[in-house]
Length: 312
Figure 1 (cartoon, rainbow, N blue to C red):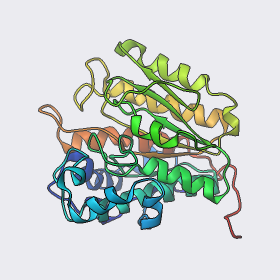
Figure 2: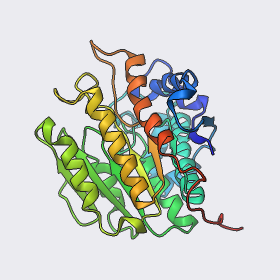
Figure 3: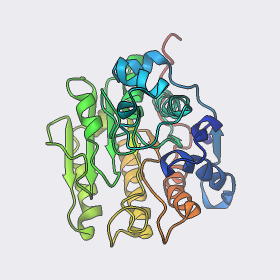
Figure 4: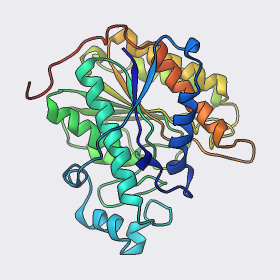
């Protein structure tokens, strides 16, 4: 079956904005231009249903959502660190819906999926942070649990720590996070359901990820992995010297081979990855194709395990 990746034009309503918003379109174009001979399955872009007000309100506070909608108070509306835009809430509702639809599709079919969504894991209950506005990872995880799943893993390999996610899942049975970062922004104290590794040396990056994955208890009991597949560890895309394109290619292979070994479907999102003096938007998009190619290469031939949709 095709690798379904969720995207719609509303992801890109803030056309002059930060890379978090504008790169989804560039990645969609890069996917459309992919050589089909380089993957083991076809890749299909699918429009998601935007997240509802109720789904957002289950994770974020009323005052914060009002600020996103109206722009006031301005400091709260811009707590993500970016200028407020009237299209902000429709944009993040669309991209959050993509994470949710990818997660539900992965759980229901047993096949890998993805969404061209970014700017998720720093957002907390009462505000945004670090270019993240709505925590679509937690919205999606809650949706999968509500649909009948028992265990969701958030695998966070963005350059930065996912403190927003860790705070939001605290006390929610069935959601856990494994977080391997190279930059200490948004760091938090590890606990059994949110385990953080902060890597100091580039040479330790891949071994630390492998160790973190191998340390997961009973991984075959996970229903779906939400993979925050940041490309910002890359030395030219926001990360640290020594983490190259080949390192990230090896990382994606490691993640999807682990998923195949334990028999769990992955729903990935883009996460971080930014332009720099040495990297333009097309370069960033090509980095994100590493995730797409790895998911397509290791996509289960028959969709893997499947479950009945809730309600029949």
